[in-house]
Amino acid sequence: MSVTTGTVSARGRRAARIALRTVQTVLALFYAFASALPKLIAHPSAVESFDGIGWGSAGMYAIGLLELAGAVGLLIPVLQSVAAAGLGALMAGAFVVQLTVFDGQYAATPLVLIVPLAVIAWARREHNVTLLRLLRRQG
Image 1: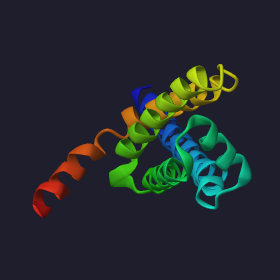
Image 2: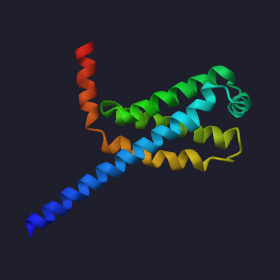
Image 3: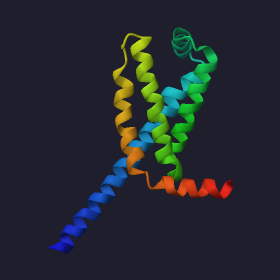
Image 4: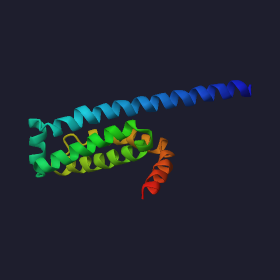
């Protein structure tokens, strides 16, 4: 019986890893193409939003670059946890901006995105030790 239980839990762990990797990939594609790209190509909707916030094109390009970096980081094992945490911080900021500047019109969107990002940051946290080792070797 313990062999069957071990097999089931191994299958469950494998399924969880596949599901998490799928969520990471979907989020990376979302952040790269649906979120960062419009900012980086100065799509009129992005320009209008950032002008409304008062951050202009510099803020728009900066946020776009951070989102693109986070999207790439979600796909690189040693950066996954840090990238998810960074994107989560961006989403916390986006939530505040949605509430204060845009009267909460789309405030739920960043909150919904924070949930899977927090799961990724926690589930991939073991990579942080490797990242720290790499950074210490460089320094």
